[in-house]
Length: 227
Length: 227
DNA sequence: ATAAAAAAATCGAACGTTCGTTCTTTTTTT
DNA sequence: AAAAAAAGAACGAACGTTCGATTTTTTTAT
View (cartoon, rainbow over the protein chains, first blue to last red):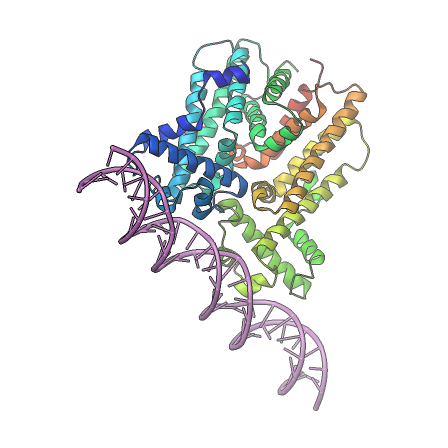
C-alpha cells in the first residue's frame, strides 16, 4: 500500500465527515435539508480548522469564523448551539472517524510484520489527508472538558495498544525482539505524531508522505531485531 | 551521568531563571530592588506556567493570574508591560536558558557514541526539571508573533542539527549506520519530545526519567547499526 | 535613635473593547 | 402562502489595561 492506494480506498473528504455530523446530530442542528446543512457545515469546519491551526481555537472569535466561512452569525448558530459545542463536535466526530478507518484497515488477519507496516502506513496516510484535524485535535486537548479529555486519552491509549498487541504477537512468532512492548509502542506513536505536528519541517525538506512512511518502517524494523 | 548527577551539576531553579530575567529586562521592569523583583517574578512565572499548562495561555486571564500568584493587578504590571510581553519573556528566557545548558553540556569533545548519549540525556533531564516550560513552550508556539515564531523554529532546527552532526561524525568513524542523517535526527527529537508532551502517560506507568533515558539510548543504538 | 520626608511598591476601582449569545427582521425556498 | 434559512443589530459579561490612592520601605534630618 502507498498513499495513492490509500486515497482511493478510503473516503476522507470533508463532505463525508460533515454528512456524518449532520446525521448524528440532527437534534442540535436547526437546518432541515441535508444538502444545505452539509454545505454550511463544510464551510464552518474548514474555516474553524484553518483558524484554529493558525491562532488556536480559543483565540478564534466567532466573528473571525463568520468572516472566514462567509456565513452570518445566525447561520452559524443554526448549525451548532455554541462555541463549546462546536469544539465538542469537531473533536468527537474527528476521533470517531479516525478510529473507524484504523479499525477497518486492521480487521483482516495478517502476519505481525505486515500488520505493523499496515498500521503505520494507515496512521501516516490518515494524518496526511486529515493533517489539520490531527494537529487541531492534539493542540486543543487542553480546552476540552473533563469527560472529553478522558475520551481523548482513552483514544490515544487505544491506538497505542494496537501497536503493543502487534509487537507482542511478533515477539511470540520470533520475528520481533525488544525490551518493553508498551515503551516501544510509545516510541512508534511518537514518531507517527511527528509527521503531523512538524509538517512544516518535512514540507520544507521536500520529504513526501511515502518517503516518511518507507523510512519509518525500515527504521523501526531495525530497532526490533536482536541486540 | 544520571538524573541525580545532572541535578547537582546544573542549576535549573526558577529563582535563577527569574534573576536572569530581571537582569536582562530591568528596562521594562518598574521594580528597582532585585530581591523584590525576583520574588514577584517567581510568583508570576510559577502561576503563569501552571495556568497555561492547565488551560492555555490565551484562556488564562490576568485576573486568574492575580488569584494564582497572590499579587495585585498593579503589581503584575510593574513586572511586565502587558500580556503579550509576558508571553514573550517566558518564551525567550526559557529558550535561552535551555540553549545555554545544552551548549555547555556538549562543549567538551568526546567520541560520537558518548556524545549522542550525552545529548540525549541532557535533553531528557532538562525537560524533566523544566517540564512545564517545555510543554508550555511547544504548545504556545501559535500565539507568538512572526519574529518570535521564527526564533522558535530556528531553535528547534538548531537542536536537531546538534544530533545530525553527531550522527554524521559517527558515520565517518564507522560506529553508526543509517539512511538519512537529518531524518534520523528528526526521529530522535520526536522521541525526546514525547517525554515532556506525554508526561502523564509515563507517570501513570511509573516510568521514571532514568528508565526512559536508558531505554531510549538502547533503542536508538539498535536503529543505528548495519541493516 | 527617632521623626519626618521621599521613594518604592502595592492596590483595586473604572474604562473602553471585544467576546459569545440572543432575537427579531428580512430574504429565500418550498 | 407558509416554512426554512440567513442576516446582523443589540446585550451583558469578561477581558486587558490604566491610574490615582494607599501602604510599605528606605533615606534624610535632627
